Figure 1 (cartoon, rainbow, N blue to C red):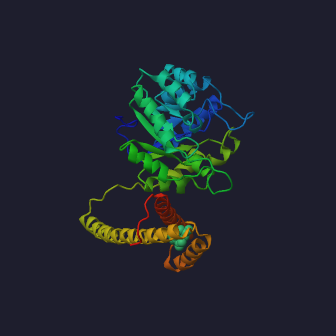
Figure 2 (cartoon, rainbow, N blue to C red):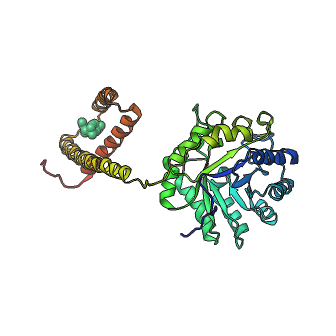
Figure 3 (cartoon, helix red, strand yellow):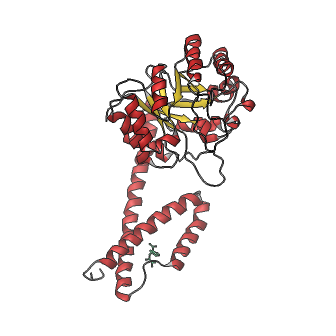
Length: 364
Ligand SMILES: O=C(O)C(=O)C[C@]1(C(=O)O)C=C[C@@H](O)C=C1
């Protein structure tokens, strides 16, 4: 499906900046003023005015009144403006106020009915839309949200990665699971993708490292929350910083990387290393194939002798044995665990096929 960029003629990283919520006119204007005073590149000024909060009795946004403040920011500072829409009424209000871009939040992307309602409300306009990932790590649901917009003819669509909800303690407020946004890029080649590092980090300290991690993965830019007096913010205080701090501690430190290099020496060395990787991959997969053949032979014996496929003792022996060897090889236990589990799963499924096949194959 075809789509056009949300941001045109913008140098990377694209920067979408502003407070989590529009609280008062003074706070919104002061945020913009401090961004301008600190010479921050603002490609889009953000502020939530309808806030989908996890629990009731917290600040749920100022409502449509906030649109007037955003328009004032645009008039006085020349920044394009964006806000979150979560239903058709929000969408109508945002279009009426000529907001430059709208975004669909994570709690809305999870609900196809809500996304469809917004898509239908925006149909016939040419407003660009940014779609945040759903709160659960579901690539198809994220793709579905984008497709619903494209289906009604909206073609300026981009995405925002804000991490995924998780249970239990972690350094992140929302776990990045980078493989999911990368898979989305694969499905929609060329789609502009921003990283909402504020929601992934959930604290001030990790804003830079999360933003840089995203740029290292070829994200187009960042969405970051900033507030003139962050500790007093009415929502998400812990992850907001002043415009001056945002510039000094995050934006100015960001390194933008190119996807390919133009230095021939670099290119030559890279190709050399890549051909070594190709050789190793070939060997690795030949070994995997050999191992699977052995597993199939075991499967035949087990079938003939009425023995279960799954062998707890042997499996623990393999896992624990490799864990011990892998450390000194410089491989993390997380990696070894993942690889061995994938191998074991495939081996079991091959043996399952053998057990269920009608005719007894002779052992080769
Ligand atoms: O050793 C066996 O019995 C096997 O079938 C092989 C294998 C493996 O792939 O390593 C597969 C399944 C068992 O749970 C244990 C190990």
